[in-house]
Image (cartoon, rainbow over all chains, first blue to last red; front, side, top):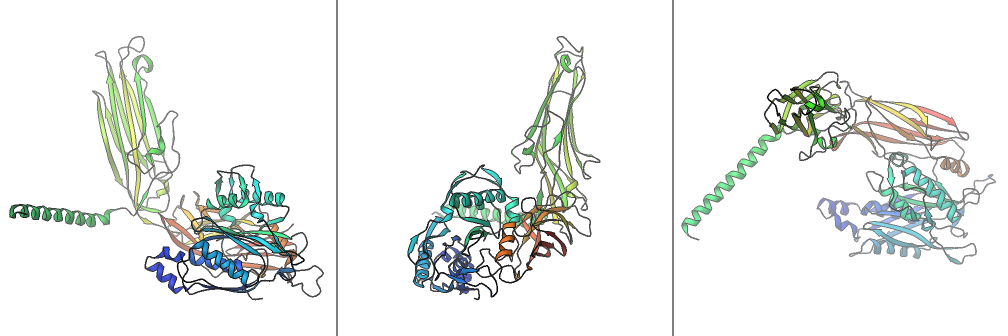
Length: 247
Length: 360
């Protein structure tokens, strides 16, 4: 399956920025059209929305298990199965008018569900321009919808309030994995920036997502960092999540 | 409004316009002389125990706070031995073309001489070095033998040769207080003198910023916490042999990275096609690092186990290096970073410098 994300058009946004109306870019107009064709079209459309409006959006996969939500891509002759999210082509056209961040993202999720893609999600506003998209339900193996608690909602406590961002994130991953029972690996991350940043946490206990946001907020990069938690549905020792950190 | 008031108003308006015009003209005329960069010391100063207090006040960008010392001597305590206190400030950022060094400072003395034979001496001295403390020149010296007096807060400046290495500039302040004559050195002979000295601001104005024209990458160690990623060091230089100490180099993404053949659509890892956003201070030997290149071990294992196509796989992406000039940055080089995974090995590469290892 090809992997494609398109945000159209950028001309109007550029015009808004150049005319000093950058704040209006947080409202979606008739120009807001996004398209992704991939295994995780929601995550990819959210990346495009984030890039267009300058929002910081974290994303978490649901735990795919129903046959309609996953695809077997095991190469011929390979004994070990290879499963991936089924995904598909998702086109989102933002409604016209004055639609603000949370309402727009809720509208994205509504459109995603209407397309019949995997999972049910919730949009949360964490701060001005900062959002979190989390799974709240997924079809189980029998096809019945079951509620799902986001793995990054897992309450954890880090052993110390200070350390390199890298060390604290490694401890956070181990702690979430231990508390939730789901395997989590550290995926694609900005190693240099995380190693070089010494972090001081006001609170060492709470939701994993809250602590991770505290850590990333202290990492100096040209654009704010966020995360994407992807779920590997293939049975085996890596069935679980990958924590990817980036912009 | 009466005609008289109108005339006065017009006169005031004309005067106001003239003042504004003169301010604008003065401002425009001053512009060429304004420094493009203002550098200040950055390192904790070295000095004798009991030296100047609040040393950071001399380089905190405020000329309203001072690093100060007060020292007194008395015949019955110190006899005629001098008390000397010195503090040295260093740590200017390297790689700028200096124009002038300026120190704002003040000093004062209080003499309490109770017998005709008693005498004292107070000296405040500001010196600077352009070769890292190897040789010192007096910027200003103030001394007093009596009666009480003071040197008011003021700026003293010196024009530095344009080829001065700004990283090698140092400033030191010395307060000397001494009874030079005592009727006797004990008992009730309490004649005394007290000296005080304050350094309010040290700044180095510069009008040019030099940048590297070459960079050399070298292998160092496999990262202690991420043993499948390699720590590369680098050293920068230019044809003038500039010392870039305490400048900051940073990596930027110029775009065009990839493809990442270790990524597949549906992988739980995002593709690695851009730099990770590192920034490093330049050391005193123009070296910086480490730049860590590679995937975490868990990602390496995941790719090995789940990649559909046979190994090896790899990714590469450009790394534009910039160096700060004051608050802005200037690009000086673009490197290529590569990293890859094979069945039993991983490799990392920075600017053509390649290293691989067995893993696990």
